[in-house]
Image (cartoon, rainbow, N blue to C red; front, top):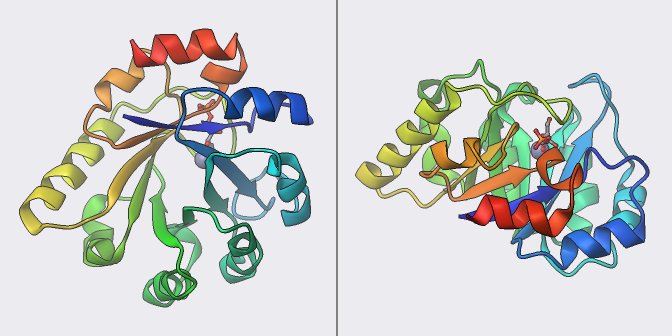
Length: 209
Ligand code: DX5
Ligand code: ZN
């Protein structure tokens, strides 16, 4: 299981905290980009995100919770992340956004909210490098894991097996040392408050147990 660490719940993240996160046995730094429109909360501008993460060495996993998707893709592609993930619910021309990210040579991720079914997005799955299953309502950290997400992960896992798709399955929201076990068919778990609200290395040890 790969782990993407989210620093959403660190107030005014500083170099010291980011360096500490970066030194853990994690695979990605997860950037939660919120615009105050698609979700109520607002995080940072591209320049601020760049400054916060510029000392880190891990690959970047950008999660766009925004309505102006293309503008944010243009900005965040500059930091050459491994993935840029947009929300299915935020766009009207899904295929054009997928191709837009693909043409930049960046991994294409698409995310679905808890209320969106896998059947609704099935036709886009062959073109995705990553599918992000939100296991809480997007918008804030520290929420409780929604159990129905496990079913979605399993559906996506079976579809990939049967149809030979190549996407990675990522789950985001409410992941701790207990809920991570239920997500064993996911490839990447995003973990925020469980890491940042305790000793980081101790949290990692519990997650990896
Ligand atoms: C929620 C964000 C998540 C969040 C996860 O909208 O997309 O990445 O930071 O935080 P925890 O792990 O605290 O649920
Ligand atoms: Zn996220």
